[in-house]
Length: 565
Ligand code: 1PR
Image (cartoon, rainbow, N blue to C red; front, side, top):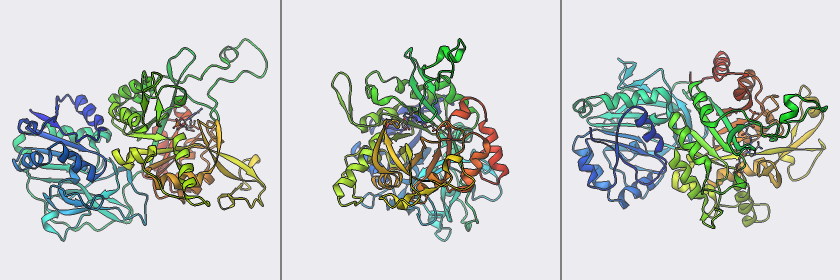
């Protein structure tokens, strides 16, 4: 089979290549317009923005060959933007024209009742009421979506509705999850990031005889009114903080309030604790742990290069090899953080944040996480506005440049706030963000109040910025998601800081991942019941195997919180 993959230059399409290799398929990247004639099957794993995709296709001379390829009746599989380009246009990029094969327009999700992007695992419901599984798509499975724009399902428009194979509901909107007609199949979600359910779907399409793939009939138009609740599940994220130990090996470590060195015993002795005191805590190898968490059902994985600021950005950057090896093992989204900023390699070569992010995307990352540089960018933005104003980006920050090239869904901001305790009657600049200790809270908190100050360099330096100012600032600059750590709770096992999580969640409209402090499975139930967060992240309890990801999900399911099992 002449299987070809189309990359219009966005770059972060390595996941699909890894998945196809896993499934045992050889493929060739389209590298010139002439390649379209050689292809007998074509997959377009589009990522990023609609306009960038169309511009990328035009500048490479691919748009007309792609149109001709699809018109020739040979099998086509479009993923995410690869599905959206089949439509007439998108409000994301009004000046760009799509292929116009499906007569409808892609529009932005309504943000009134939900966080946008729609990011996470959701169900797809087949239009054909007779079957619960079809073309490898299974109604009882969940698939990984990440997008801000969608094609609304409108059964009153038969010319467009006849293409719709399945739909998904987010908030109160029912949109097109998959299309299927003739030789065309497309999905809004990412099968290459959807674990075994996604592998099954891709395998089913790839193994179908080409004649069958080229001749699917239209779908009848069936009303699909929204249900009371959507099918989006809460995500469980396993995070690995990676750094080199004293022998120079990259290991997964874990700190207590960001201190990753083993503690000395209280009295001098000859125990193992005394002999290892001061050494970097070693909890395993990053790739082996990533594979373990994938097998255990983690919905996403994070690899944080926690001492990145001391190393060169790209030259001899050992994290790239770790990401490459981890990405080959796992079929769920992978976020890489640490050192995503403009920097200079030891040989004097300047590297832009975009270039550094690009290297990680090509290695197989799906999202990059920016921490220190995000704080500086918001500070610059506020300084430009003056007079305490919020301001606007100038297009040069890491968040803006990466979001422009790879889409905002690919840019996460990791926030490292620390509590600043103040008098409960505090009336200073952060009074509106004050959190008060509850009577049943920890002893240290009772009768006290605090605000949350942002830090940089892994908590080593405080900055004159509150967590709300940072969260709102990065949303404005174009971040697609926030990982919300807590230096006070990190590694303590006391539970997530619900006051902090609620404060940030109610001040932004992008998804928030609660992080730091998980010590028991009940803490996950608490954070989902007590805040509106989309995901919860933990490190220590998973590394030390104190609680399994499956146990967390069982506890959530028992509390009627929707999870992917
Ligand atoms: O500043 O863009 O280079 O990014 C550096 C990244 O490394 C940031 O995301 C920062 O949070 C992280 N980092 C830096 N130093 C440390 C450290 O621990 N010394 N790790 C560090 C922060 C927090 C979480 C942890 C959760 C859950 N670790 O990653 O996984 O707190 O832990 P728990 O479940 O065990 O409580 P830049």
